[in-house]
Length: 191
Image 1 (cartoon, rainbow, N blue to C red):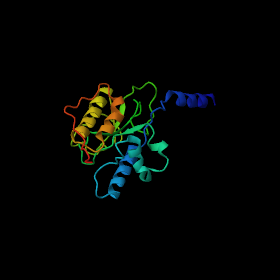
Image 2: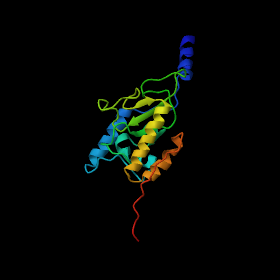
Image 3: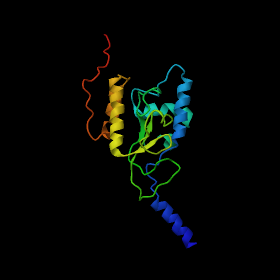
Image 4: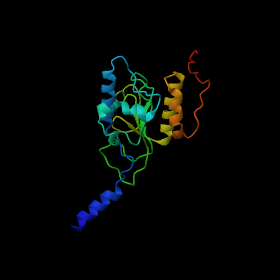
């Protein structure tokens, strides 16, 4: 009996339960169904460039309890399904030891960043996978900074809807401010 109790206590305190990811295959399916239901678009959801509001667009596909599948994630609005696969669609807000949702990691493993790329990892024959994961990549902070900066720069240089809001929302994750020169100017409305 004491071995069972010791094992249960060890399991509870030696496993790092923080920043546990949700199943990224389900995210992938949710986004694909959302896009198929809107046959006229190849765009991922974008509600004014806002991360949480845009991610909530797939609630019908993912389930009505977003605490399970959305908490802890930062979503980058403004991307399209045909954008370069290495761009970051979403990421877990803080470094994690988890590589995928089904493999608990102990407190002795290092932490990395976990991102979900635009191609959900399905097109690795077209690019290099920079880390392990399930429809995701577990990458170092240095690689995360490069990939996130590249994604935000891509949105700005391609003048995607609400790119300024997206940059502002994700700027806190960058170790150095993003330098865009020259900045694309939003279209001015006529009065």
